[in-house]
Every structure is written in structure tokens, then in C-alpha cells.
Length: 241
Image (cartoon, rainbow, N blue to C red; front, side, top):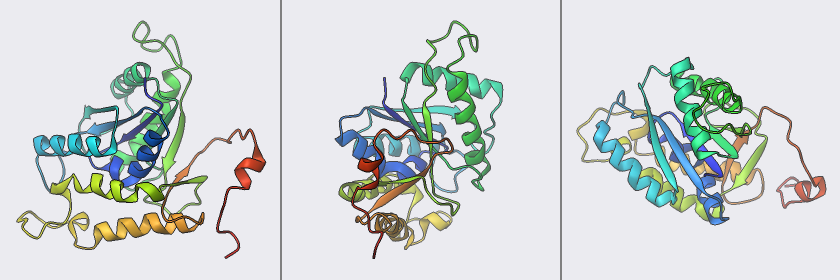
């Protein structure tokens, strides 16, 4: 079983959005995993086989216990029943307590549809009569959405100060997708020379909001059940600067 599972569209999305959080959770003793929903076959750069190898190398850097691919068609992901059944079976097998995924309203249609797919499958996995007889039903995992493409106030920010360097190493494992002066393939925003610095600076910005060197932000749609508000609210924060 897995404690925390990241479910994202393309083979490098996990690293870009929540790589630091997965590294931190692993350091705290939790079992971590990732599901790439597609193989990234619509990508401007790289090949399906090459990207699969890059994902394996990135998984090694992230120290993931599990990394799998749901093999839904890139650019054509929908929350249809066939896709829901596939994801429900994965959730029942891996049994995560927390799921990390894209944020709602993401402009990429695969990302937006995966949000719907994840939220529906997380609930359906708890219903004994849905896909009856395949896997044991589980309590619906809490879904936390990475704040990445839209500007919204996060519910919480994870301090990844000790893991930013490793996060960037995991991102760079997807070498076909990012800046390379030797590449002859078409340019994209991701392949620009400054994109990786922009990403690291983004982590530093969110870290600055909680008074640390680097952070990753999340939004949770449901009300959070806080056991000890004093412990929560007296964590060091840069709120008076």
C-alpha cells in the first residue's frame, strides 16, 4: 500500500508540481507513489519509450515506492466510465490515504479532466457495488490539488527547503522536455533557457510566504479537520515582515 499518491497527466508533471512534497514525505517515513495518466505521446519533444525511461530515472531520484502509467490517450483524457474503472482499480490496489493532483480549472484539458476523474474515482472506490468483486473498497482518500496554473490562495504550503535541489534533479531527468543547447527539436516554453530557474524561483516564492527557503502550495476543497489549532497556527511563519 501507498500513503500518498500523485496522479498527474504527463510523465514530467509529478516532478514539476509536487516533487518536493513527495521527497519530504519519503524522508518522514511514508510510502510514496506516482501515476502518470498518459504516456505523453502528444508532446512536442521526445518519444514514448524515451519518456518512459526518463520517468523511471526521475522515480529513482524521488525515491518513489511505485510509479505506474495508466496509459490513457494523451490529449483525450475524459472522466468516462472506462477510465474511472481503471483508476478505481489502481486506488483499491494501492490504497492511498492522500492523493495529489492537478488544480481545478487548469487550462490544459487533460489536466482539468483528470481532476474530475480523480475526484470521482476516489469516491467510487469506496462503493462496494461499483466494479463489484474487483478489489476491496477503501475510505475515499483526501484529494489535495497542486496550485500551479491558476492564481488562487493555497490551503497550505509544504516546506520543501531541504529538497529543492533534489526536486530540480528529478525534473532534469526528463531531459527531452527541457533546455538543451544541442537539441534540434522544436522549441516550447518548457525548453527555454530560463524555465528551470523560473520553476525554482516559484518554489522560493511560495516558501517565502511561510518564512522558509522553498515551498509547494496546495488547495483542498473540503474543510480540514484540525486536531490542534495551536500547534498548527504557531508554526514559524513570516507573517509580520
